[in-house]
Image (cartoon, rainbow, N blue to C red; front, side, top):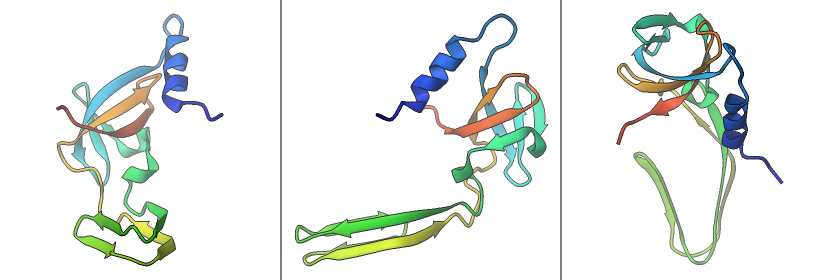
Length: 127
């Protein structure tokens, strides 16, 4: 059985004692490349960050799509494929992130223990 990474993160944070602890923070992207993030009114530069791999330019993922006689439709932004009947099989297709995911003004979720090194977990939005 695979463990829930969010549950593990929660338990890690809950087990922190005294002055040593893990802190979740919100930051605002000032520039995506080179990365500069406002964290609590202080600009933090790229060398202080470990960033989620899927947020960086050049990130690649392998995709596998399959469909059968019931039909198939897939869309990704302005690109799409559809099949009304028959069989479709696409494997080992590489999707590459050619532009930065983060933009000026984006809010990001950060994790830190010492306020010197930050783990940029993901981009977040307020609903």
